[in-house]
Structure formats: structure tokens, C-alpha cells
Length: 225
Ligand code: CA
Image (cartoon, rainbow, N blue to C red; front, side, top):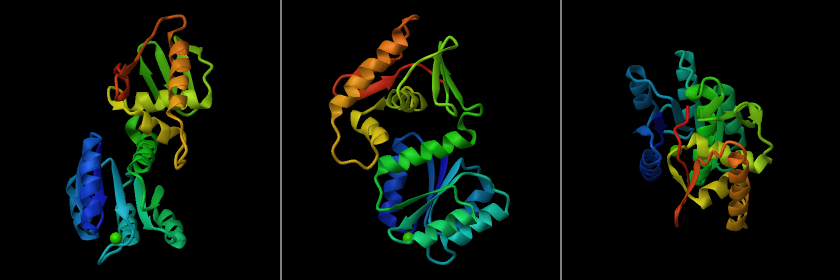
């Protein structure tokens, strides 16, 4: 996906550029609203991350400007801790979601994925791989049209792996997905959930899309569409 990042703090901007790039996105990162507007004119971006506290034209004005010009891309705003009013105003101005600084990159990634999914990433809100199909709206998985009985956590693991298919996902990243913000997390839980999920996928048609990458994590090793 092609992302626009508007953040005036050089370190954070650099960090976002690097990490989002590593996550497979193409990133245009700029320091102010004027540069963002200039870039958006000649480019298509799939999503924008906008810091509200910008020098010159602030983030809120930038969002109004973008929406006013008819840009419908999903917008995630970054706000300083405690500025509750800014959050509300930002959403009212046309942002789709917000993240309070300081944040974990995993949290940002989860929000991004959710926004991208809701926009045009998967048009039908369905993702499929071989005999397996996910309905992202109903949170349901089926194999050859037979609905699987998955727990909420099993479904979330499967969805996350499929939306990030053919990438190695660490246990830590999966845990962050399942228990965002919690400090005390037991990695053994993931192994148990993974075992159950695999058995359910395998039953019947012998579908084994999830591989273990020794010492690294898991990979959904089938192309998804
Ligand atoms: Ca700022």
C-alpha cells in the first residue's frame, strides 16, 4: 500500500518511514501540511497518517482541506496524550481513527490494517486461499462452503495471518493482536490456539496453510485473494 505520513518530529517521521517500509508499504513522509497537499495532488495514496500538531497549517486544517478537495482515503490521526478534544475534533473533521502518542508500532499497524481492510484492500470483505474463505464482516471462516466453528481468538489469528499472508509473523505480534496493551501475556497460549486452529483447518480436506518458521514465528504460506 502507498502511505502518506505527515509528521514534523524528525525522529518519529524517520521511524515511521522505516518501519512502515519494512512492513511492505511504500511511504511518502513529509514534515508539514503544505508539502502533504502538494504531494497528494499528483499522487494516489491508500491511506494517510497525520499528526495533528504541525507547524503552520495544523493537522486538522489539513484533513478539512483534503476532504474538501474530495479525497476519500482513510486518515489516521496522531495526537498527544490527553488532548481528548483534539481527537474528537479530528474525527469530526474527517479522520477515520486516531492513535495517542506515544504508541507501539504494532498498535499502529493493527489500526492501519483495519482501516485498509475497511476501505478498498479487499473489495468484497472476503479473503480466500484455496478451499478456505474468510468473511471479514461476519467474522466467519469456511472451507468448501462449510462454516468452521472457530473461537473468537482462533478466528483473529487466522484473519491476521491471512491478511499478512506469506510473511513471517512473530508470536509477539500475534499476542499484540489478541491482547492489545496487556503486559502479562503467555506465549504458550498462542501455541495452543495455533494447534487447535490447524486441526480445524486440516479436518476433512487436509488443508495445511500455516507453517511454523523455527525460532521466528508463523507464516500463512498460501496466496490470498
Ligand atoms: Ca507534532
